[in-house]
Length: 264
Image (cartoon, rainbow, N blue to C red; front, side, top):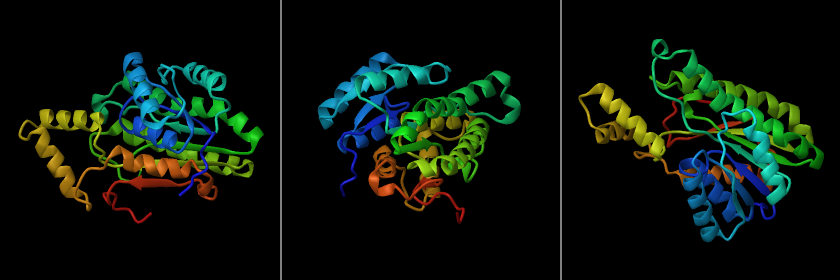
């Protein structure tokens, strides 16, 4: 299927590895120029080189910490200078620490809000005026299945990603008349470094099971019987970023192998 992304410019957050990297690759394979970003310059440059070689697309690396308020404007300026006006925005950041409510102090909440919610707000604020002027734009927020079915021990993620969902759904109505769509994709248990870290934390806290046992327990809960792969979620983001998805907005779509039990 021709997605009509050739010549488009995309900005993808948290894209040096994992889900963000897979999304950047999927967009590049469709012909978009992609700005990737992350907090580790060396890892980011290695990803840029690998994606450019694999796809032949224009890939620009711009290190930055999206929890910093000024980072979004800096990334937007780099994108404009190197690739052109931003047509596609994908907000994606690493997950906050695990923990129950009484274990999490004000600093942890502040960091989670800045990293998950404010980063999405700031990036959207930076690119939205240009999208409205051109009458075309695609904004996708990577959240989590936890916004539909909260996961025990993920108090910060469950709470703050729900706020991102409320923001996205409200914004979708405001900008639809300008040819701009706003959607969320909800990864389930997906094979990333973050999931390995989470499984290790759960195993260490429990003391009675190994990391492999945690993975096996998760897989048993998933109707598809396996963990997801980053490329599977990235394929959905590429479609939502395309000309073909012009009538899809205000949605939150799980990519979880059937794990979420909700009807809607």
